[in-house]
Each structure stands twice: as C-alpha cells, then as structure tokens.
Length: 335
Image 1 (cartoon, rainbow, N blue to C red):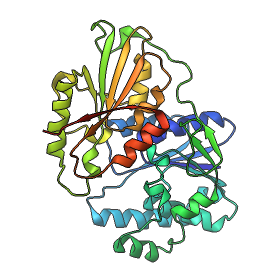
Image 2: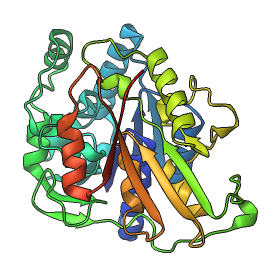
Image 3: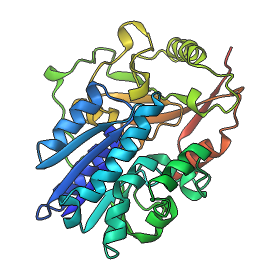
Image 4: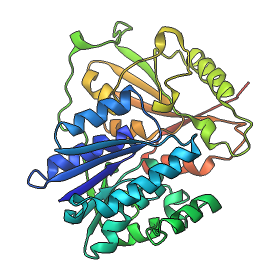
C-alpha cells in the first residue's frame, strides 16, 4: 500500500502521472492544503476518482487553534488508522511541510523499512539557495508542538536521506537527490479550437502573462498585494498582453478586465488543451515554474520579468532559471 501526499494542484498533476506509471500499486491519497477553492477541489476530485481512499485536509493557517487541533487529530489518526499500518511506501513533494511530518511520523517510526519517494514542489527543487537545501528552523511554537506530539524526529533532512527516487518534470537537471526519474506531463499535445475560451484572431499570435504572488517573497514588507496588483496591471498594458493567467493564490484579488482567465485548471493543463502549432505564443512571467513544461515548443517564446527596484534581492532565482533554461529576462521599472 502506498500513501501519496500533495499540497498543491500542481503536485496533484504530478501525483496523477505517478499513479498512472504504477498501475499495479494501490494508493491512499491525502491532499493537505492551506487554501480551498475551485482549483484545489477540481484536482482533488480528479485524482480521487482513480484512488479508493482519498481525503482533502484544509489547514486554515489564520486560525491557530484549528491548526493545533488538526495536528493533534492527524497525529492520533496516524497512530490509530489501521490502513496506515499497511503502508510500505510514502510518496510526497513538500518534504519541508510540518503537517506532513506529523501525518507520516508514526508510519516511519513503526516501519523502519518504509520506502520514501519524492517529487517536485516547483523550481525550489532546482534552486540550491532554496529551503530544500537548508536546515529547517521551526518557530518556537511549531517546535514545541512537534515535541508535544512526539514527532520531532521526522524532518526534511530525514526524508531527503531516506528518499530512494525523485520524480521530476525537469529533465536532466540536478535535484534534491541523485536518483531522478523524469516525468513528461503531456505526451500528446492536442488542440481543439472550437472548445477554446481564447480568441486566436490576432494574426496567429498570442501574448500570455502567467501570474505569480511575488509579494510573498518580499522580506521587507514594502511590496504589498496592492502594489502587486498595480504593477501587474501596468505590465499587462505595457507588454500588450492578451490574457492573464493567475496563480492559484491570486484568484480573489487581481482585476484585469476581460483579460483574466478563470479556470479550475493549472496553467500547464489549460495551455496544452488549447495549444495550436499555427499560433506563435509569447509568454511572460516573473519566474513561475509553470512555464517550464512549454520548453521545446518551437512556437513558444518565454520571457521572465524582473522588477529592477524590487525591495528583496531575487537575483539568485533569475540566475537559476536562466542558467537551467536559458530564458530571456526583461527588466522593468516599478513606477
């Protein structure tokens, strides 16, 4: 029995491929997320339809009491759940996630031979400066909670060391462990123009902006959500963007008129369903890993947008993206 755990819709997309690659294996599916919307529901239900035992666990990080209660609840579930005693393989992406550590601790402690396999959580897997390559420093509250629940020994370092295989969409790129198996997300590119919400009439050219909540990466607190909305709207006008595809955490506050694409699907899924070899695509993003699946398509040009005066230095991320994928970088003023 395998336990597969996801924390984002993108991870569910990867998990779906992993399940398809192992048709003779039985899975338990857990989706642990701090957001719940149409997109998370869609991907949960999509994989749930292929797995007998599935559960969506919503962690409201704004409610401290609920977070503590969930941690206690799922620590007890880990101890009392008979199905978990049958788990001999755990497959997960967010190896740094405290809730996952608590969830799987008892499995690891009871079964020392349990197999750990990992998969991508985004471009952080490639960035040697990211949290995946540093020791985890928990806050005092989280550290106390982990101690209270007797699960302090399950850490990111432990999971990395135990991982026997890593599934990745980043072909021939070094990852968090050496044994990497490449996953191709989309084997057959299909296109059905009659089923498309997008207008392809602009002389067979389309300009797309793939969103990203970069304000979350500003350590100074100067670049706030309102600043982000203003900057994105200006960029859409300046770059003559046809459509804006929001990040899942941008769904509720970005207003870009009729250019805003509303869909339950992640960008990779959405794009390849509507891809046409007869259209030239220009893709803009800050540094979203969602565009990496488009590499190799001859009619797609990908540009990274770098805000010159962004309060926090993000140069290492842009360098990593450029070194690994040779993307063009467009520097803009935030005026």
